[in-house]
Every structure is written in C-alpha cells, then in structure tokens.
Image (cartoon, rainbow, N blue to C red; front, side, top):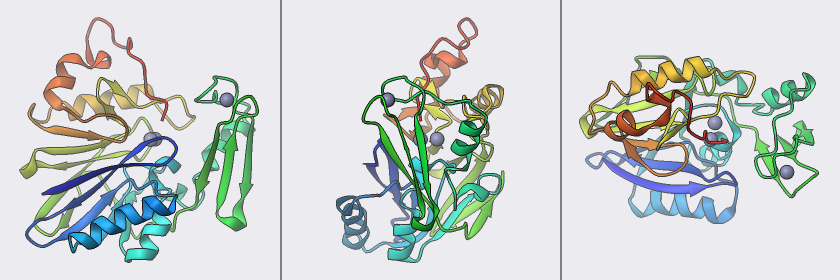
Length: 260
Ligand SMILES: [Zn+2]
Ligand SMILES: [Zn+2]
Ligand SMILES: [Zn+2]
C-alpha cells in the first residue's frame, strides 16, 4: 500500500492519497484542495505514479475535509463516498453553521476566541464565507457534489487488492467514519482520534459521549496499528491507549481538544 500524505487548506487538513501497488488503483481521503498549487500537487502525484483514482472518501462532512471534492471529481471522475448520515450536508456544508448562528450559539473564532462574527452564504457560487470581525480569520466553505455511494458501518470498500473496512465513529459529526485496512495495519481516523487528543464535539451535532465510545472502539484494534488522523501527526493505537488523556480513567477529559 502506498500512502502519500499531504496537508491542504486553511485548517491544515491531512489528505491521504492511498494506492494499491499491484493494480495502481487509488483513493483519496479528505481533500481540502483550494489552490492551484494544491491541485497540481495531488494531480502531479497521481500522474507520476500512473494511478487510477477510483474514490474520494470523506471521513465526515466538515468543509475542511470536503473542500476539494468538486475539483478532484471534475479532474479525475472519481466517485465520492461518505457515511449516509453525513451525506446530506455535502452540497451545503455551511448548513450547520447557519443553524448554530440562528440558535445564537455562536462558536468562538478559532484564532482569536471571539464569537464568530459572520456567515455569508453565496449559494449560487457554491460557497459560504465564515469569518470573524475581530481578527483576520476567514474560511470559505465550498459545496461538494452529492455522494455517489453511501457508506455504512461494516461496509468494505475494495480498491485494487486493498480492503477498507468502514467503522462508524460518531461524535465529532453524526456520520463520522474511520477506515481500517487490516492487512496493512493502518487506520484513517478522520477527526475522531488524534495524536494525544480527540475531535471537538461542541458543534450542535457533536456528542462528547459518542466520540468517547467511538474512540474506545478504535483502541480495541491491534496496538501496532498506525493511526493516520485528520489533523496533526500520525500515531499508533498502542500509544493512544496508554497516553491519550481522554482515555485515562483518572483524568477523563483533561486534554486539549483540536479545534477542527
Ligand atoms: Zn471535522
Ligand atoms: Zn477572530
Ligand atoms: Zn477537520
């Protein structure tokens, strides 16, 4: 299995281009491709290695994981796969943010900590701009084409000789998934399990109880499993089992959660 790790987008999202080395069939996990140079980087890699991109798999619907769906699908014809519970958000990933603002539960700006100041929905342009008036934070949420295939817990996605097992890991979002490639000892954990942390659950569709249950399921995998998260450095199941502050019986919730 070939894994090319790239970091794209304003929230530094990990994007993984993964291929079966025998058949050169490939998939991409969580492309937040917005700029021409990012597009050239991933397409260059696909062309250089003569890969056939079959799937774009989103671990969840958040705009920092789906921003490149449209561009990558247009360029390669790959199908978009996402869990059925997150699929409805793809064409309007800003919906949850507008709901939060409607309910006056404004999430703090990830940079300066002030309340999120505006959300401009430009539906005809296929995007919304979320930003803060107190600092320069500005984040474009790009619409994705609808899903081509809906995923469910226990599904197996075959890419060449690779078998990706879908593990439903809700909490960060209702339809969050992790993808386990048992033969290769690899787990793509999205924003559920991070190196020494877990994903945020303070958006209105998040659940702290659910994410803890999800992470407890993931750490049942073999300790040598390499974890490729949605943000930050890779880790292993064994290390997280021993050191992740959210899994320790004494502290429970002592660590700092990622703001993605
Ligand atoms: Zn997320
Ligand atoms: Zn700010
Ligand atoms: Zn994220």
